[in-house]
Length: 149
Image (cartoon, rainbow, N blue to C red; front, side, top):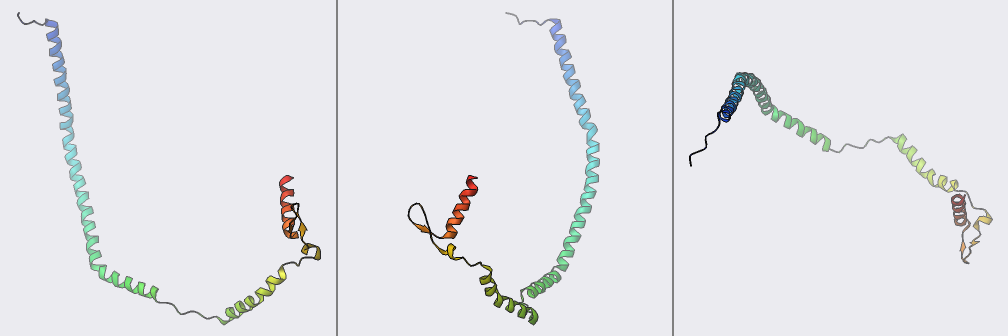
């Protein structure tokens, strides 16, 4: 059998499609080609800034190397100064005031608690037959009164 022959219309369509594809490829190439000089210009500008930053960083590094020994000695002296215990400062007035306050503290603590009356010292019977102190009974009573009200 002889090979199939394509119609003239299909061949023209394939040719037009190939032409469009080639045109798109040329447009992309032109875009890339037009951007390349701008990229080179950016690289040159960025390179000069990069060189400036590198040189500044190098200068700082060199000055640190030069001053390292001085700074290390100053830091060691500072640490030594901080680690040395400072002598306690004695202020006789404040010590006297503190001792008098401490001696008066037990008296103040004992006098601050109110003494229980005779009725409050009596034990209060409970429903199970045991006895409790009045203060415990009063706390429970107030608790349940507040809870139920």
